[in-house]
Figure (spheres, helix red, strand yellow):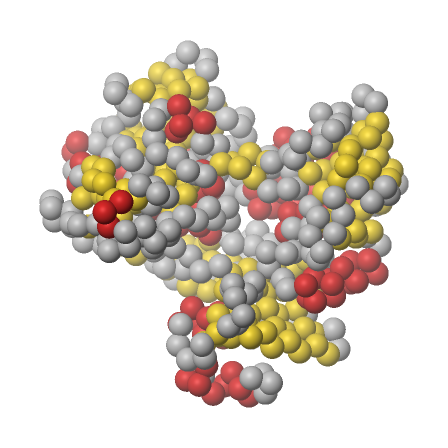
Length: 487
């Protein structure tokens, strides 16, 4: 059975062939691409884990690397950490596996651990009361496109059939010496392997007035319910943040009849995915659909008394609002790991097998930092969860990273972004072409295509993605010159 990834929303599908349409976002079959997770042979006992003393990168080999691939530190700055084989001693020694976190990484980890270790006791712990659900579909739920029941990934019956215990509770501490997880309700869960998939939390900048009533985020199903309860005809809403979540949220609420404004601190929308010109074209399109978009604006204060009444910008402009939704990114929930003494930088540091600085503890998803990268996207959470669950259950798998690639639909606009779209130096050449509402941008360096952006027409997305990821010379792809004569 193969694994397929929806390039629009990141949904992962298991099956011999891609589905006719994505059950998460409705994208067509041709928007799916194969998604490979690498399994590896067990390494010899002489292999160990080396930690970079500068950035904490973990390297698995008999000797440290000549230089750190993340920060370029020399081999002398690496120190031995632990023997990896302590974490992979076979199913017979793994009687209990605990997974903390009920998102896609946690559910996938528990599922794969059960496949690898049929007889182990597996417990999935989630702070949320709801069973695991499609977080990426919350904006569609806000828009009224789907019901709350359609969000659920697995039913209680499925957990019973898989013999995976689902526990709705909050973990308060980890005792690594006794291998215990302490829950707030007083329970203690013992483990042979612990998988941390406890995700991330929304970041709310320290705006004056950020704690007023009517200031919200969109991360959980509870957040979505709270926002829907506040919706009334003509309600004025300000979304702070012009990234993917901010625009999807704004679009969803606009369709519900709200008057919506978007405030973005950067000079253009989707600054991580689009070059400025494409961001400007998108802004014009959204404004024609009734959204007010303000780029290059910073928030001074969320004005009001007990409840928010407006967003005051540094320019002096006041946006009246009955509800403010902050979509300014997320931060890993690394508190438990720090408290337990694990190595944490921005997220929990893991090696390619998703093993932390403690060989009995693995991590995956938004809480994880792998090779210096915090992914924060659904496909990475799925892949890391599968690798962590496989290894926690006694199997052997590796996660070697994902190429940055985004294919999305903002309201009715198709977008694709892949590779390095922000030039690191003057050696990168940008080729742009725009006509009839279609925009294309290619980023070239040293004879290679290192990044690509498509707006309005994404039919060549797969072709460009393959070229970017290949690392080969542009001259080896004659079809590219036919599509883009300006090269």
